[in-house]
Image (cartoon, rainbow, N blue to C red):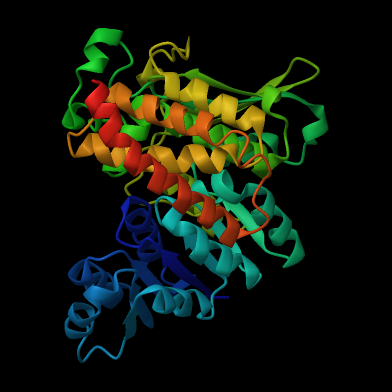
Length: 392
C-alpha cells in the first residue's frame, strides 16, 4: 500500500530530512503536496524532485516566481494563506507539520480537522493552543505523532505503558553553545555565536531558542499536552552527547529511555512507518562503545532564565504559554537584528508574561483566539523594545 504524504515546511531542515527518507522508500510513499515559506526556487526544485502534485508558498508575493519555476512541470501551485490551506486539503494519509513558529498553527490545525495523521514538528501548535489542539484531535479522530526527537523518544519509551504509572518524564538538552559559558560571556554573545549549535542544525531561530534553553521550555509544554501529564512530573536534564533523547521514570523505580544518534530522520521514520520500522540509508548506527561515556548535568536556570520562565508559564496555564511564545519570537528576531543583547530575550519575554498574566488567564478556545492573543502580544512586544533599549 502506497501512502501519500504532504509536507508543510518542506524546504526547512525537517522537510529536507523527510524528503530524504521518502526518496529511500519510493515504493511505500508518494508526495501529495509541499509547502514552503517564500523561497520559490527551492520549493519548485523540491516539488519536481519528489513528484508532488501541488506546491504552495506562504508568501503571496512569491507566487509569480513559483509559477515560473514550475512552468511545464504539470505541478499545480499557488501562494498565500488560501493556497497553503488548499495544499493541506489535498488528499493525504500523513501530513508532516514542520512550519516553524506560530505561523504553523493554521495549516497544522486544518490538517487535524480533516482527520489526518499529523507528524507534528511544529511545537508552537501545542504551546499556543494545546488544549484546543488535543480536544480537536479527539473530535476529528486525528492522530498526532511526535516528530521532535525528545517527544518521539518519550513515546517509544512509554510504549503501551500507562501515564498513571509514570513518576516522571524527562527530556534532554544538549546545553547549546553556551553550556559552559559564564553569565558575563553569555550576556555579550553575538547572534552568530548563539546560532552555533553543537549538535543540530535547525535554522537560526530554533538554534537561538536552543542556546537560551527556551526550546526545552517549549518542549515541556508540548509534552504536557501530548502525554496528558502534569507539569510537576516533567523535567529537563542536560546531556551534551545528544544520544539519550528522553527518559520515562516509572513509579516502581525502573527507567526506560529512548536512545539514538542525533539524526532527525530517526523520529521522522518512526512517524512515517506508522508502527513499522523503516531502514535509513546512510544512517549512523549507535555504537555505545565508540561513544565512550554519556554525561548528564542539571539545567542551570540562573544562566538560562528562559527555561525558568517557560516552566512558570506551564505551571500558570491558561494563555501564559501563548503570550510567552509570541514575545519570544519578537525578542529572538530583535536579537538576530542586533537590537537587543542575548539576555534581552528573557527580559522581554518575562515582561510580557507579567503584563498579560491576568488579562489572558484563560486558555484559548480555538486557533483563532490563540492567534489573536499572539498578534496582541507581538504588537506590545514590538512597542516595548525601544523602551528597553532606551533604559539600557
